[in-house]
Image (tube, rainbow, N blue to C red; front, side):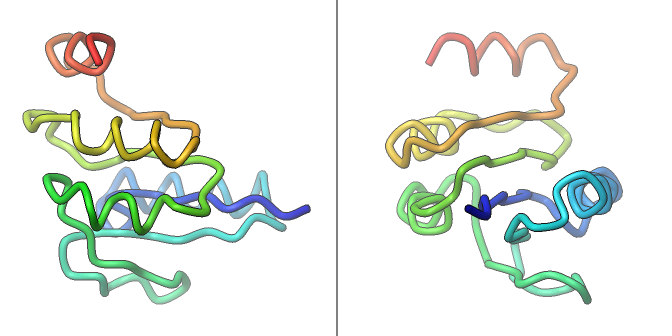
Length: 108
């Protein structure tokens, strides 16, 4: 069974790298990218998502197995994204290295 992986921030520098890595390591996975415009990645289906919009996040994560958060800088509220992943029973990983962001995620 193929897995669905959503890369949030797929058109940023780190997100594009994550997409290439997922393509190489999980070639059968359905890879979906997101960003604020829903455009800009020539090789992926893209979805428009605002990280503060829980409804849009829930929609894009509804059938996902894994959400990888590559949207930096990590100075926003991770609550809507993490809660949407939990509600969707979707695994969540982020690339944050800022301790304040990691602590906010851990507190959810």
